[in-house]
Image 1: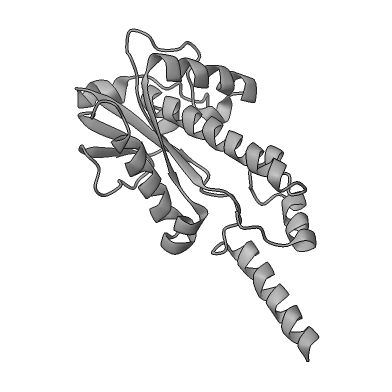
Image 2 (image 1 turned 30 degrees about the vertical axis):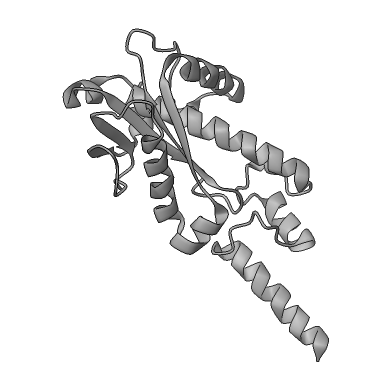
Length: 212
């Protein structure tokens, strides 16, 4: 079955000024979660716009620049500390709320990828499961969030070499998990995530045993 191509049908059905909202970085063991909100200029939509997951890194980077130049774009973040304090779901919703609040123009509706709507939005919110594959506005937001977060993780990789964040973006790859075991937990790791939590417990147990 061919993958659907996102369009503006959901935006048209809602009417008014629509901001697509998506996040990147729920699954990684390290780094912040990023959300983006995008209000497209319908007369100036970048060609090739699609769900970030089906695009190459080079295509995402090119579209990132075009979307920023041709649309109203805002990015919201939730830190590792907020992720550990709130849980990743609530932190993702917080980042989405910050992204929508950061837009230059308040939209009539925020069209949000997924099945959860953030509380406290400055406008009504409507959820759309797998929205990045259905809505051009959400697809644009998925590209902005993905590229912005990948660039942050590449920067963190320079300060903390060996974990492979420049290629794994903090996701729990075999090499990342091995580096965690070998080099330990950094301040950018999410301590509430089980693999990181278990390593911290293991190191604490070893430290106690060494004192006996």
